[in-house]
Image 1 (cartoon, rainbow, N blue to C red):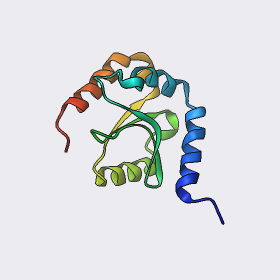
Image 2 (cartoon, rainbow, N blue to C red):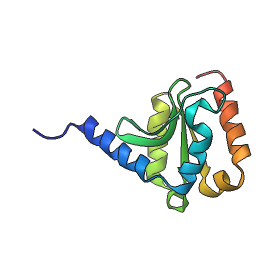
Image 3 (tube, rainbow, N blue to C red):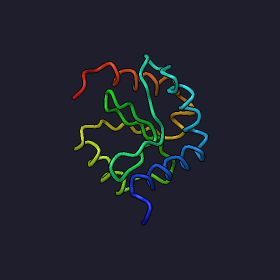
Length: 118
């Protein structure tokens, strides 16, 4: 009997959590433990066939932190479209944006958290 797909995705998500980028670790310091307006975030969370960087399930907000490899990436666009069809809002930030303007990034996330759910 093979490993179930869900178990495999959980295993991959765990590996991603253990190997987070420096930028993901930096943003996670501000999101973990309900530090941002009391909202709970998860990191490297599986949704469908995808694993997202950060998610707030209550408000269905996904946060993606992108490096240069995501520049005009067709797969990201298809992925974002699918996630939006599932009712999620996807916020994308560049690595340098998170590292040099964390307050601006957090403010945008706060705005999305405080606006009514779709």
